[in-house]
Length: 174
Image (cartoon, rainbow, N blue to C red; front, side, top):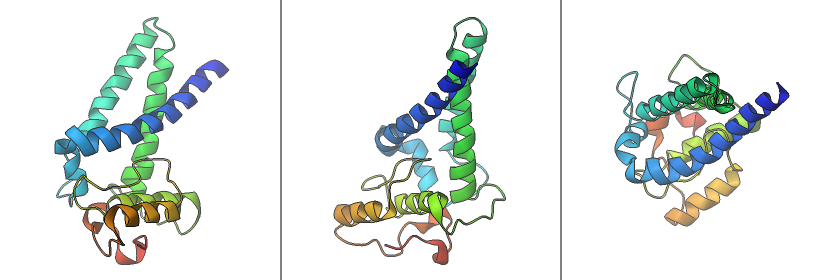
């Protein structure tokens, strides 16, 4: 039982590492056609970028099925992927993008840092020059600001707020 829990927790951590790489090199690379919708103002409940979640949910379902058919510990890896998907839904879709009635705006601590980091990710127009590709991990805000300034030769005053749905008073300072 403890071993299974460890597999789930390690899978959640591995998913965040995988997500950083996939977000930077796939979603902001050859997969931009799907991900672009996430960097534009949303016009309905769904966006093309949601196809990534559908794909990875399918992978998790297959792993859970294979694990329950005797290919252990695949069911626990699938459970870890599912747990990561839930955390992504709460933190990314709920907290940052408000895709469900989640009105909380963090004013301090880690959630504020996560919130600001993702707003800074959206401060860049297009797929090039973005920063902070994690969904559950956020580097210190000062580091992200410095990286943005270095990539863009100065601050990005007022750009990119549309997709993140932030109000001006919630925008991470440049």
